[in-house]
Every structure is written in C-alpha cells, then in structure tokens.
Image 1 (cartoon, rainbow, N blue to C red):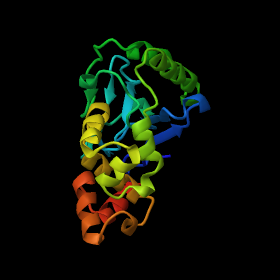
Image 2 (image 1 turned 45 degrees about the vertical axis):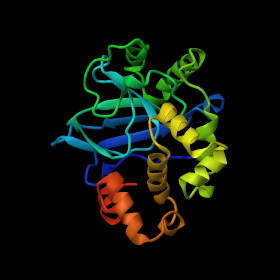
Image 3 (image 1 turned 45 degrees about the horizontal axis):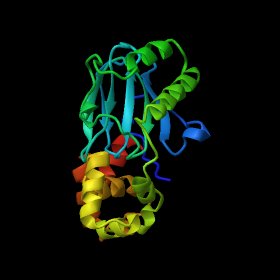
Image 4 (image 1 turned 90 degrees about the vertical axis):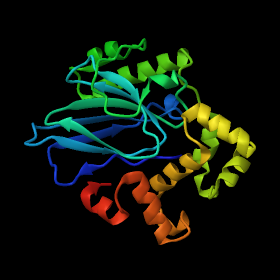
Length: 246
C-alpha cells in the first residue's frame, strides 16, 4: 500500500521530534498513520517545516492552543510552514480519496486560526492535550470511528486501486485502464474525490515513490526526474536529501 514519506525536517535542528503510529487494523484501509510533531525544548530560532504534497488529507490539532485545528491537504507543491520556536501538533493522516467531508473546508496552507466549523475537533483536541502520544491514540481512533459513522470517510475503491498498484502505472492512460474508467471519467472522479487531476496525482505520487525507488523506474531520464522533483519539492534531489531527514 502507498506509504508517503515524512515531511522535511532540517537535519541541523535537533530539538524537534516526529512520532508516527499505525492505526488499529480495523482502520488500516482508511488511515495511513497518527502522527505527532513537537519541540523537545524551545528553539533559538523559528522552525520552518517543509511540508510535501502527498494527496492525503490530515486532521490537525494544535496542542498548545487547542482552539486551533483544521482539515489540511496540499496540492502539487511543497509549502514551507513557519511553526515558531515552540510547538506541539498531533494529526490523523487519511489515505488519498478517503475524506468525504466538505472540500471547501480543507486548508492548503499554514493553520494558525481557531477552528470555527462543525466537526468535533476542538473537543477532541482538549481531551487529548494533556496525554502523551500513546494515550492520545485510542481517542484519535474514536474520532475516526465517528467520521466513519457520519460518512465523512470511506474506503475509496478508485484511489485504492491506484495506490495498491502504483508499479503498474506509468501514464494517465495506465491509470484509467487500471480503474476501468475512461480518461474523462477519471478526470471528473479524481477532481471530485481529491481535488487533483490524474496528471497532477501521478506527478505527486511519482515524487513520493522516488524516495524509495530508483528514479529510472519512474521517469524517462535523470533530467525529467530532477525537473519533476524540483517542481514539487522546491529542491533538486541531491539538495533535498542533504538538507532534510528522509
């Protein structure tokens, strides 16, 4: 199954901790992981987090200010988020296509304002704020179960086919054939489900795969690989791996 890489944390910063936990087996087809990002001690300078697009939707909780939360997703380009000198975030990462909630509620930039919509995000954030990461996990799983009951998430059989058979997809035509949809149907379906065209989804997934496979298995040549990688991440592959933990 598709497994997006961790976002970029500068190697020079030693006081930022990222943790990840797998969901219960009953939620495995919906949730990629639960995650936590926090400072261990206050930093001397603002921390800039390099968030990579992965076609996933995240539910984000700010554990320093529990009124700040949101539904987040990036499109096709990385975003640099200034998180300040001290922070504590927790999140739920859903596989592409799983989230069925209001698309206009999804934020594609830094989340720094109180959550004002109708999902029980603030209640959940307050409930988990004083718990260590492992003790937060059952409560996060309960929230996922609530999303499931309210039909805000579902297993998406179109994106599931794509994500489980990525090695067979080299073109948008391959993607359409695999999903048994015409190119036009695929375009409409993916735009509705994840807000990406088939071409943009393939571009994001290829870059994600390139961290785990040789680029020649994914791209026509090195020049194409470097151009595509830089367009998504803002760095050449060499500079990215030199700067960030991967």
